[in-house]
Length: 585
Image (cartoon, rainbow, N blue to C red; front, side, top):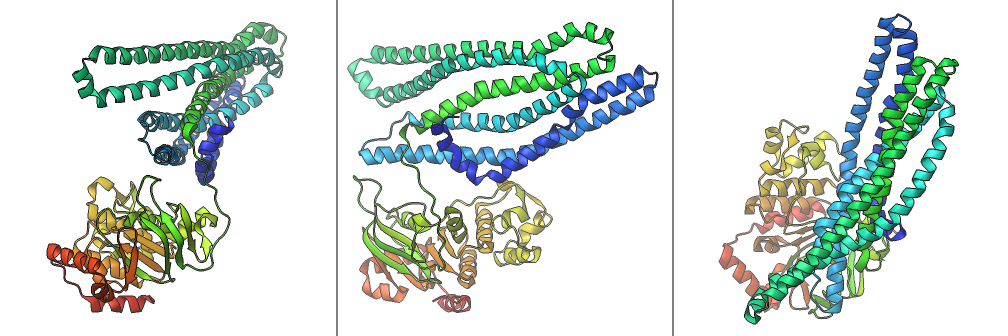
């Protein structure tokens, strides 16, 4: 894999080492049948069936069958961590491609190229599928090759010498074919993107095409792109077929050589009948499939995924660098910060200073679309200001170690994520060491006791599609409540709850140690809040609910609009008591 391709996926690999190690361990266990196959077949024949002891032969073959069952279990167990890894890589690539494409468009002040949609939908899915196949198959195929060669050396040492002049020329030919294949595959991908862009031009300009009578010209342009794409795909398929032929020939030649040598070896006593069948077993069920898998995967799919990654990196912006520091405190601050979505956009905030002491309970309000979610994304380190800095504990977010930052700052969006798994796995996802009593108590706080009972306890399997949107939000809120995060940001994370459930959730987080920042969904959240931050056009104003009512006409109008619209009533005394119990400043 070239350096560009490696740079594209290395961050996802670095963050998912554990699943990869688990895949390797299970693959190692899965090679046991290959390692034992030839030896057990030889023993079953020579000392069992050919020696007149059929019972012993059947017992040995039974051991071989048991090893096959063990291998099947190991392969099944490897699928789980492999899925975790593959999905993480796909998500990383989609985020990267969308981010870089939009960044390029915004920076240039032009519309985004529609060809990048082909990259997101088609090419990232190609990478996910191929990479999962590669990691799963290559790990098992390499180990299988080692196991088969070890067993073959044990039975027929001379076969190792015969393998070298067969496999080396085949490998050389595959390398030469692969270079041509890569060029043609890159051309094929380029044709796909050009076709997508051409179709977009035609579809978006249908009215103009009809008005100008240019339907024939438009059809010819699309037809030309289609023909070019078909020719490129045909060229790729032809070379793929040639390479598969080389792989198949090289895989079967060792077996042909063994069969040609077998009469002489058996007649001289250098090889027993059982050892001959055992060696054939190693070649036919171990070495040949492993060689075919390695060469096909590395020669075809690895080359394909490297080529796709090169295409995906075509508009790559400079990579983000992970910091190395950790903060010792948790006060948040903006210092001369300006954020906008490109030079043609109005700033969300400009040259802004804002300090939130550790333990602050803050509610962010403002008109729809003013940039509340953008602000909390900046606080969470998911967006970076174009000027100024964002600090946590006096340390710039970009200098903090990403893994530490993600543990310390938790942002909960409107769309709650509940995955297929047990109730325990969902609740303890961010706090794997949490005890059962802590999980049950937290679930009770957020009104999830009935949900736990419905699924038969903490070990019951959740089906996300059976939960209401409100239940999904409650599960997500409970998960974050249990987490070690010292700064919790709720971005309208209670929008699907009724007012009573929302108040209960907010009170729970008010009692929780640490800083709490909430983007308000209802005016009741702001009226209960210790501090309120009003976002206006390029401005941030902070104060208590009462202070802002008297000092800010914009806030007074916003409150009036909300209360007339929702008829909100608030028990402020209960909220204040919750803040005092939680130690909020």
